[in-house]
Image 1 (cartoon, rainbow, N blue to C red):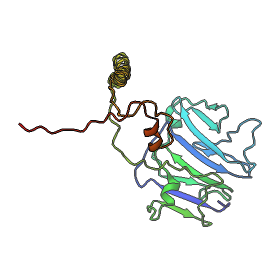
Image 2: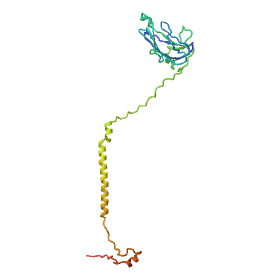
Image 3: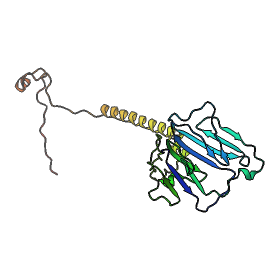
Image 4: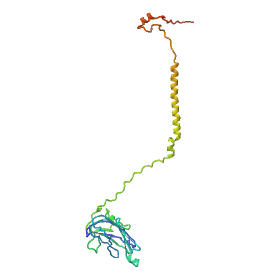
Length: 251
């Protein structure tokens, strides 16, 4: 915003009278700042604080005690309260508010010089209305044209929408632990013993069959064990051939 910039918001007959307001402004500037608010010009300042160094600041202004006490909060600094000696609450009440100005009004020569990122007046957001693609007719930018800017502050980004998925089925922890409980250990021990008994049984059966597999008779001559060939075995034989010719019997 330049010295001649001005934003004017028209309440359009929705007159409101207030004793308590909540105003919030985010800004950066390198110029001295003063506040013109209400029934007379007042400069509400933070002692030993300079907010005209080009840094971003968040200002919150509110009133309490029937409008007699103004509360000024800037960033995370300690809130400052300013009490005005007002006898009648009517003197501190804003009656039939018609317009709200940002930057300056028609009676001021020079306005705010810097960048304003947000303006809130209770539940009204004037800058948001002005910067819409089709702004409403009751908010206008007058004087030097304005350009949209975030004043060095990154805009708020909302997290991406999570895709809805079917929730996982409920798990019965007791039933889940049951297959790995003591019954399984006992069953495993029994199966191990049975398997060991089967192995022992196979070994015993094998040994028994090897011992009782039987003998068969041969018809070799005695004394021909050292023979080099069949002819020599016949010569060295001592018993002769013991092969008997099979006979067939018919009845």
